Amino acid sequence: MPSLPASCLLAQAAIACGNVKMKHVPALSDPGLTMLYLAENEIAKIPAHTFLGLPNLEWLDLSKNKLDVFGLHPHAFKNLTRLKRLNLDGNLLSTVPALPASLQELKLNDNLLQGLEHSSFQGLSQLLTLEVEGNRLHDGNISPLAFQPLRSLLYLRLDRNQLRTIPPGLPASLQELHLGTNVIEEVREGTLNHSRSLSVLVLSNNRLQEDRLAPRAWIDLPKLEALDLSYNQLVHVPSFLPRGLRHLTLHHNRIERIPGYVFAHMKPGLETLHLAHNSLREDGIHGVSFLGLQASLAELLLDHNQLQAVPRGLLGLRALQVLRLSHNKIRHVPLNSICDTRVAQDSNLISTHLENNLIDRRRIPPTAFSCIRAYHSVVLEPQQGEGESA
Image 1 (cartoon, rainbow, N blue to C red):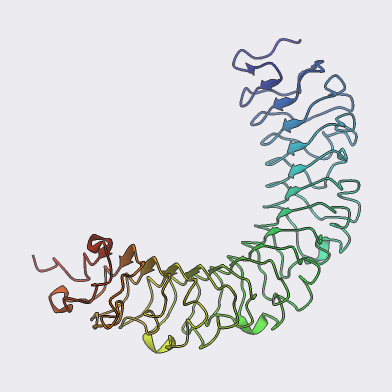
Image 2: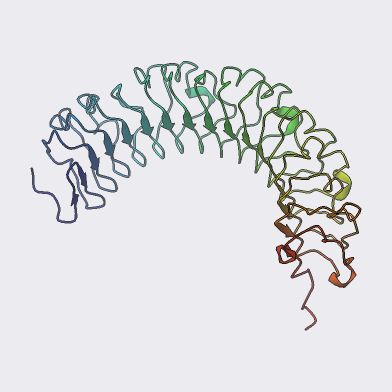
């Protein structure tokens, strides 16, 4: 065993030498070593046979070093035939290096990747997780065949690139796709047709408008349960949402309207609906806006909008547990707007937020919240303007 910096940590099958100003990978020869942590160093060069003495290495972290395509030998990882997890985040790589077929997790975030070729992931049929966030990827430098070898891929992260559309040729096995903070302007019909296993799709922080969402963009995704469209340019809740969707995130858009029956086709129905930080007024929410969610919706966030009244349709939401109407312009809480006093039945609400509105609490009907078992869970203080004259 070569001499290692004193601050390195050694265990039976692991060596951790993070942030010790190391410039070279130490010459190790230990068949028992399964984990090697060398993150946050100054390693700029890895010759061909560096890992020859570590045939059973399973986990290698080289993140936050100075590796580029010139310093990293093309066959540097060739001998690591049992390697399962490789972290190369925060280096200077412009292409994907040659990798062992045993890999299950590959992290290449925050590099300088200039594209993904048809051969970039050749042989990686066992890969489950791939992260290439924060690179220089755009529509023109990702081959339609780039992801073809990844027959087992479950999780793909492509956030913080320059993509205008969802890349074609995604693996049919994919369950979770993250495309946040790109410049995606449209979702074309057919792009996700082969991703029928997809359960989570994140498209936050893009440039999406509802007229650029193809009507059948994701209607045929039977397993999609979570869709994040926050921080886009939508002006109403999109139509043709996936039938089995459970979680819809739409905060920080320009939404003015929840169209009637927009959720009516859903089964079993949404559990969470996040619409905070939009431009909703009470005339943009109809009595039938929440139709289809009566037995399923548990969390409804409508805070930071332009509502001047408690929205219609809340009474029918029998499963509702969390309701946020704070930071609006609501002046009154009328009888039978949150609790139906005509029915002697407790509500499931455990958190109701109405603070930072224009409500005169003295004018709230005594039975306005009678269905809520824990009255302290109703938050009414402070209201806008309170205490300003004191």
